[in-house]
Length: 90
Image (cartoon, rainbow, N blue to C red; front, side, top):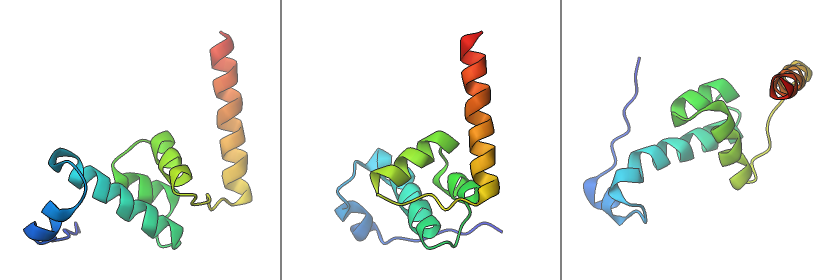
């Protein structure tokens, strides 16, 4: 199922965003909000925002939204960071 959000034209035009950025920015705002409420996982929010994993983390940081991480998530992140360090040394 795909969900479409209808925003009246006059409301969309009143947003302080360039027209070409509106959809992306609104998707990101929606994803951040739903993630902050715990309604979406990090991966789901990344898909809603239509940005990469790293970019979404930056978006959360810009909004002072803390990451909701389990111990398993932390282990995964640390393993990824370790692999990236190893690759950068090659």
